[in-house]
Length: 216
Image (cartoon, rainbow, N blue to C red; front, side, top):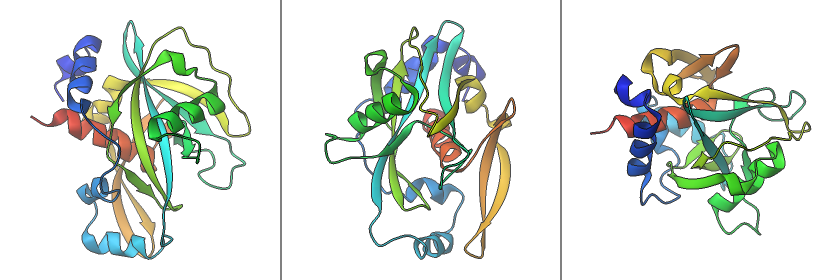
């Protein structure tokens, strides 16, 4: 998107609100991947997925800093069975007691990093994404009011950090990367930032936000 908007917190916040207004959770979880993957690629991936995918939600926390918007990310604990040490959004499985993805994302964010729901305002939903561990994930975008304090659950999260949203939205910072799975080569993007490498589903969700904001 235009650099003058990306670097102007107020205009960028308005653009996000406009593009997400009226959005609802759902959609084809495979659709975001069609940007880089062929139908044959998706068919190969589906063979490795369970017949029924579990539902999960993540919070995409956009922090309203005076110097500009940032996105709050976590680095998962290195001892976890799945996605150990990876950069991710706070989130997890949608439980039976959760009214929906928004409530699940808030609950998981509070449990994982101690982010109080009273600091978060719903902006809207990005399209559902699938991950190869067998989940369909709903990304919930929320604006986070400063003044919060974090308390990490070290059994799940080793670190929380913020990245300027203008950096994430700058296509110059999206590094093409090929990865191999199920006998096929898949193209995607990494977003390296100050020793962290944002990749996988987290990078796909961020680039989907980027594409949304680039639309006329």
